[in-house]
Image (cartoon, rainbow, N blue to C red; front, side, top):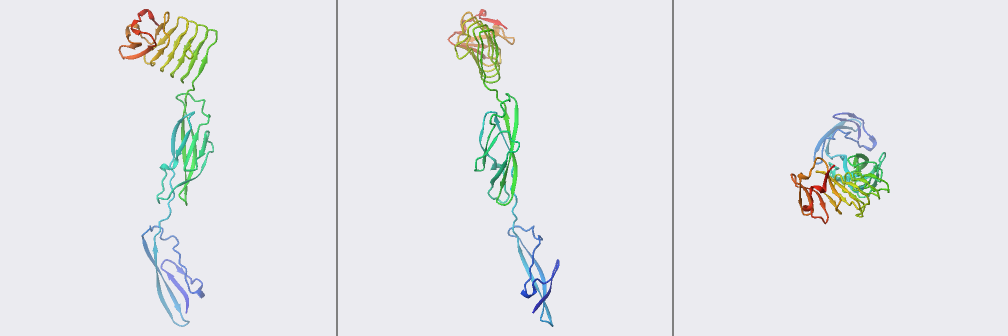
Length: 308
């Protein structure tokens, strides 16, 4: 018997390797919509001959659906850190997905254009270090950095971006005056400011500052203004002026003594104040303006204050 032709309901086919008497049929992507558990049928006819007569039969093919692998989805990540603070663990896979439920793994990362230092921890996490590259930022300043990473489900891949927001932080200052009249002004950090042996003006600015220098004080009639924050003020020798304003925080004077005076700024006057223990209080708001170490504040009089 010889197969001399067959007919598929969509296409006409020629006999494939007639001497071997078999036919090859390929779906050619016609059943891609089938999922696992789905089936479909297809068929074709073939005709045989013995050299004189012919006969025709039908071949029915059952096609089982197979769900194709769906590529994973890598989702962008974002984090925030300070300019001098490294992030040891960034778990980037936590929000990435795979519709097939395949396990995901990190296959690589790209730091082209990245300013900080990125390290692959080898367990699906990264670490990020600003590495001193953002020290020019001040408090309130921000910068961004980024890198990309690639994941795989074993077959397909996808790539996402990790964006790092870096917050500026004012570094603590250590300011030391001379034997001349100095004006020293702190920054936004927790500064240490120390005058010298002359009438100095010392301003703390923002932060919790130590003004006067490690509790030793300075010589000369100095003006000490802690600014915002909870500051520690030490006048040292000489008739010093300690300046306070409402809303600037609670400062501590370690060595208030005669002939030191307290300068009231921002519209405050002696009549706005009340006293309890070592505390000077703004009566209307109950705000503790200052604490005088070793001093009974209730003994203070208007002569201990001045307007600045």
